[in-house]
Image: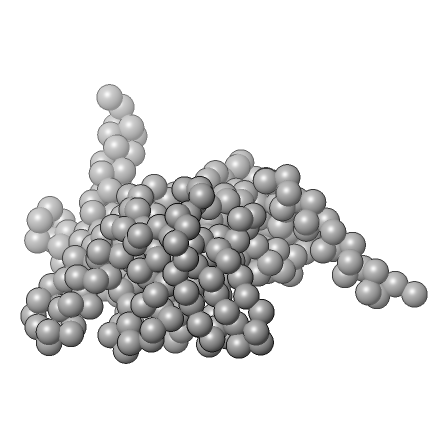
Length: 287
């Protein structure tokens, strides 16, 4: 083995060790350097450690610096959990909260944090206050028993659909459903009532995977979302992104804002819908 090749292999191992540390917990730059010194008897600089972290990012691993600590938000290849398994994680966490077992609740949250670093779909336990909402409880029960629901909105319209999952964001909760054609996101504030129907879900829900290409400066600055992964980086530095579990209408409008630096590759139906959306927008401004 040549000396240069030996250096490359050693650097590769250090990148993997950095990734291993971040899989276990969120760490500051000082923490990372300390672990290297402790376990490898090697003192590395901030610059070298930044190179290891940026190598992980280049490979599609979404690492953000939050509260001065590096955190893995998304991993390109993760564990796939069923809706039932996700619901079980949520219920375990909520049971800990309801029984006021703080130590157990904190331990459960630590487990969930580690699982989220490896999961395709991050698990966001529903807070106890949110569980009290009757409609959300009905929706989550329907997810577990795999039965259809009838959603009655406050404007008196209704929708019969298959429940997929509850998605928890910082300041709101979103109900994800499949309407027979596309995935949709529903806001609980717009819902008057959710009723569980006796009919079983007709299909095992398989989310649409959308592929789109990012070019130029957009590719370098784009922030990968929780429901996205980097599929490929070509020689020109352009990214091919896979997107799942995002509301179709919201996704198309978001990608359209990126202009000619973004191109939908598949599925064909999304390509056609994007063309129609662009044509409709142009017609609105034509004389």
